[in-house]
Image (tube, rainbow, N blue to C red; front, side, top):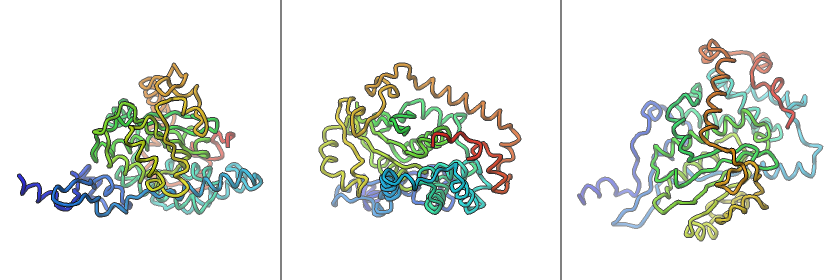
Amino acid sequence: MEDLFEENFKDNFVQSKKLDESVVSKPQKTHLRECLETRTIFNKRGPFLGARNIKKFRPDWSFHEEEHKRESYLLDHPEEIVSLESQIGQNRFMFVMRNVKEEYKRKNYELVELVVISLLRCTNCDAAKTLHRAHEYFDFYEDLFGCLSYEQSLEDDELRESLETGAIELFENADDEGRALTAGKMSEMMPAGADKAEKLLKMMNYMIIRTLRNYPLAQKNGFIFMCNMGDSKFENLSSIVTRTHSFSMSRYMPVKISKILLFRPIYFVKFCLTHLKSVLVRGAMSERFYILTENAQDLFGKPVALREDILPPIYGGKNWAYDLQNRLRGWRLEEQENEISMGSSYRAADEDMMCSDSESAQNSGFSILTRDISTN
């Protein structure tokens, strides 16, 4: 038995079982798969060491920090705000769409257009930054799902069942600026290996894309991410989930992260993070990482300032009508209605359809010329 331990764990890290051979076998464009599969373990005959390539998985908050600086600057210089529906905004939209890789537009034009619109809103119509971040997200999407043409839907039993656990919940218009809140329950997430971390990441992606599709203010003002550690124990802690989500959210997701909240933390975690958060969340983003208490009122006062009428009683809110299962039924019904309105022929031909940029911008369901963008 001891020889077996030495053979398998002598290097202080181990690759977990392959999650999906059809995905993993493809050339990877990002470090996502490595991040999911690398586990740090304890070597009983040597010092504790992290995974050898852990530097690859460090979060990079530069995109979000730069957008926060831009946001502050525009408050003092409103004349420099570029509206997406303005002529300049539309010209930049067309420029970005022309320069997105043709293979991406051919595979999933709807997703490409949505991501470009969202990032333009987020970056004050910065075409160069939008194009760069969009390509990073498309590469991430292909590594996560295997191909860009894959579309998430609640018809997928695994996704639907994952959402029904309530491990991650979504609350739109969570503050007065229209930001969306994703609330993860650590007690439901952990303990987790690479396969569970991947499911959670797919849940998060589904919620983000769904929100961007329906809430322009969330496109512009971003998301708030909250980890609820209530009812959690030490065995619920998992470096895989924490590492993978911070890595993916900071580097790839097509949204601006406004705040990160740690709610009802375990005492030991609260003590450590209070002293180490500037190390773990480096740079200016550490100022937007809030360690809260057990008191739900922390969520409604400054600097967090969430809306009581949106959050359910479990978070101290007054939304007594909130019911997760009913929300999921409503989402599924909405997807079915969209399928009918789009027509089965459109979806069947989606992989092969390739329109010119100008024609697609006028005909697409997500075009800036046809969507409701009055809230910009």
